[in-house]
Image 1 (cartoon, helix red, strand yellow):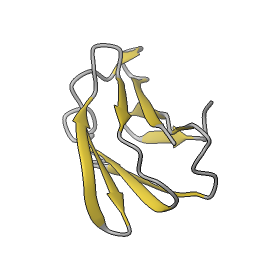
Image 2 (cartoon, rainbow, N blue to C red; image 1 turned 90 degrees about the vertical axis):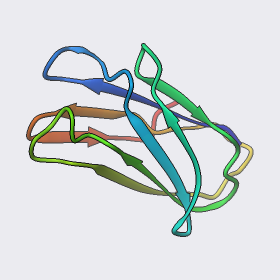
Image 3 (cartoon, rainbow, N blue to C red; image 1 turned 180 degrees about the horizontal axis):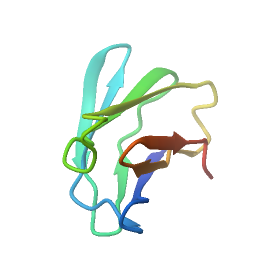
Image 4 (tube, rainbow, N blue to C red; image 1 turned 135 degrees about the vertical axis):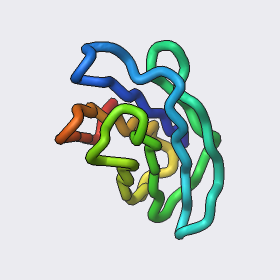
Length: 97
């Protein structure tokens, strides 16, 4: 299984480069990364189970110091992509491809 993310800053219309993202599995930190110049990052294989991605959004939003997305992996052979679209007072996410 592979896991990736892509963070876009809707307020500026640009990728959210340099953002810290932490991957936890069942509450335990597994990995962390800093998004690249295109706002993207790829994690090591977390395997099946319940996972969370915590995005350190505080330098881009005074309202949301962090955004946490919790998701379940049931098919470890499939690629999982969890994008985040962030604006100062709202965010959205979905299961990407």
